[in-house]
Length: 218
Image: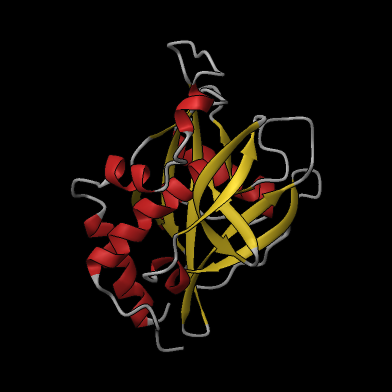
């Protein structure tokens, strides 16, 4: 593992032990008309648990992580761009969920030693899930093998692009037959909004707070 990436990983791990900017970070990427959508859904008190993963890795002097564009299907998240992840199975921790889903969806296998910490829990309104984002670091670019049933394509996001001053944009989208103004990130010409964008914004604020030069020595 290059020394610079190891240093980055260690600094990030220490920061993730401290209080998180969860609510502040999430609110910055909240669609402006979210209350309209909230009224369309009724949730039970027993929200289900799920885990997603942000897998950071170095490549040619940059630090990147994969997002997936989900295949088209008859469901809430059809065709959306998201982090690898899914619902927690019986007797499984959220970290184990994240690691399992990473392998099942994009063919990348990591172990618990790669985990550097977690971000704040996040409640996804339409699906009634409490999502726990896990952050892991691997010393090399993985060999991606997308599951063709679940994944239409893999987007490799450059962490530098995520923390730029103008990284957050706003556009009008249609969601559940409702027009909303959605803050978002643009990755490979794909709009990343909603829960995934809110989770990524928390990581964005943390990385910006650390003030690390993300252009690493190859």
